[in-house]
Image (cartoon, rainbow, N blue to C red; front, side, top):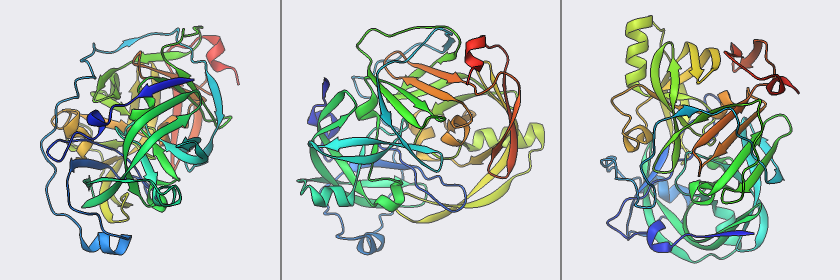
Amino acid sequence: MATIAARRRVLDPGPTSTIFGYVTALTPFLPLAAAFIVAAGSTPAPADAQEAAAAEATTSVPAPARSPGWMRPLSPAEIDNTLAIGGEEIDARKVRSRMTVAVKVNGKGPFRFVVDSGADSSVLGRRIAHALALPAGEPATLNSMTESRTVERALVDELTVGPTEVQDLVLPVLEERHIGGEGMLGLDALVEQRLMLDFEKRTISVDDATTPMPRYSGEIVVTARMQRGQLILTQARAAALRVDAVVDTGSEVTIGNTALRDKLVKRRGTKIQTVEITGVTGAKATLEYATVPELRLGPVVLKNVPMAFADVPPFAVFGLSDQPALLLGTDMMENFRRVSLDFRARKVRFQLRKCDNVAVRIGSTAARLGADRLAPSACSR
């Protein structure tokens, strides 16, 4: 079993430092909300959700923080068609389009955690924290696109997922109904892993990235750069516009920033509509959305793609506020047979369900999924 010793001084740097977490929540419409834990503080968190709502913070989102020292700057993207992911297979359940896996907390459980490749920090549901009587950590301010709020955090000795243990964590505590599971698995538990989401079998394979990596041909692999631990694809285009795409398994919908929206409206005359969303704390907000005629991820092409638009905090954190960018959610990823994420090697692999263009249903919009080039084995079912 691999063990990652996450030093508490890195994950909980003190009241004047900045840390980030990105999570999503379910809604009856487009289930998307971004939340950032931005400043550890000493103000006690409210005892329950009603008191928390009354104590809503009004501070604005701070300027983006520099990446931690343990995240090195990486090279731009390139295509690699030979990656394979091995490792231990874990049964997964779907929460709409998101996948949940079994995770042990301090040796207890397992509990069902949503897998979120866009979150710096894992998250605990309130029931787990209370049931295990976890010691309280310093509270933190959570800034979502619907509100800012002080949240409790708890000290966790270890999280266990598949063959890996991650130790010494300070995790935010949120309501289960807003995070879509009993907890959320973020990059603090994934950064040294190879992760494969199989949307047909509904399994997740987890492998220690320090072990030798099996390789075989027949799949489309795009190499990404990393920013604050997140995988960012630079070989992406939306309606022929070059964009940076952040891979985010915790978001149930794909979202673009307003820089992308403005160019789509100006160049393409894209029709913009509105939709209501619910944040991770339960607060509601209204987002714009539109149908993008084509989205390309390396050689993969998706047509008539529904996309929401808002300048949510991740874009500022990744330095993507002023250029077209998007968060690639599981509404797009579940159209593939499998999606693999290798955080250490910065590789994202897509395997299509069929080689021929095939009509798939995304919400109320029909999208077509195809590829410019594929090896035959990528087409097998």
